[in-house]
Image 1 (cartoon, rainbow, N blue to C red):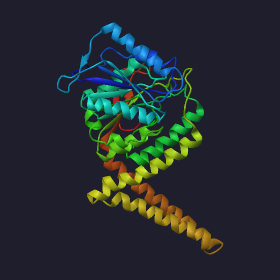
Image 2: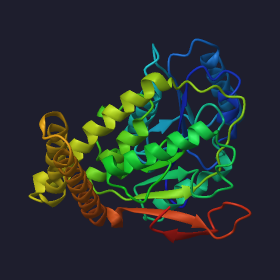
Image 3: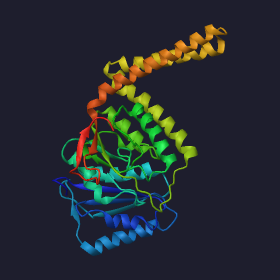
Image 4: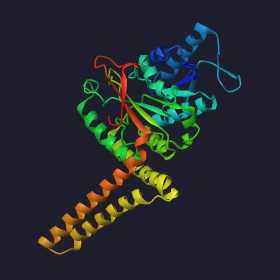
Length: 345
C-alpha cells in the first residue's frame, strides 16, 4: 500500500534473460502486486520469472489481500503468452489483470532494467494525491537527463513528441515513448484497455484514449538509463506503423471529442487546411505557369499554415487544463519533494 492506495507493477518481458529476475527483486516493498508478463520469449526468460516467483514465495509464504472484497492473490503473478504479441499486448495483459484485481494505481517497469524502481514514488504521487489519472516520465525535461540518450533516439523522440501532441491533444507533454508510467484504476476502467495498441506505440495510443475521456496527465522528470539491454524495435516497421496509428487516432479523437459534442471549430480549421492543401497541389499539377502558379502555391501554403496553426491553438486551449509537467527545482537530483509545476516541458 502507498498512502492508502493499493499499488501494482506490470513488468513486460521479451527475451530478458539476465535482467527480468533482478527487476522483480528490485520492486519496492510497498508494491502489493507484481504482474510479470512473458511475451512469448525464446530464451530462458520464463524460467527466470518462475525462479523469482519461487523465491518470493519462500521469503514470505504470505499472500497479499486486495481491495475487491477480500480475495487473496500472491504478490508475484507470472503470466505467459503462447507467442510474442508485442510490448503493448504484454502491458495490456497486466493492466487487465490489475483492473480485475481492483488495484488503485498500476505502474510499469520494463523487464530490461532501464527503469529505476527507487523513483517509483515520483511516478505514483500525482495519482495518489488525486492530481492525475495518468503519469508518465519525461527524459527530455532536463538537459542532463538526456545526455546518455543516443542522438538518433533523441531526434526521433522529439519528432514523435510533436506528432503525439497533435494526435493526442496533450500539448504540454514530451517523450511519449517513455514507458515508465502509472495509471489509475479509474482510467483503466474508462479508456477501453481491451483495444489498446499492442506494439511499440501503445503509449501514444493510450494518450489519445485518455484525452477522449478528458483524463489528466502529468509528466515527471526522469533520467535516461541505457545499459547492456538490447532494443527489440525495428525502425523500418515501427516508424510507418506508429505514424499510421497516430493519424487514425487523431481523426478518431477529433470526432469523439469535438464533432460528437457539436464543437466544429477545431475540426473546421483542420479541414480548411486540407482543402487549401489540395488546392495548392492541383495548382502545381494543373495550374498556370510562371508567376501565376507561384502566387497560387504560395497563397495556398500560407492558408494551410494559418488554418493548421489556428486548429492547433484552439485544440491546445481546450486541453491545457488536462496536462502538467513537473520541473525539478534541485538540479542535483530528482525526487518527489523537489518539483514545481509548469504547463510547458
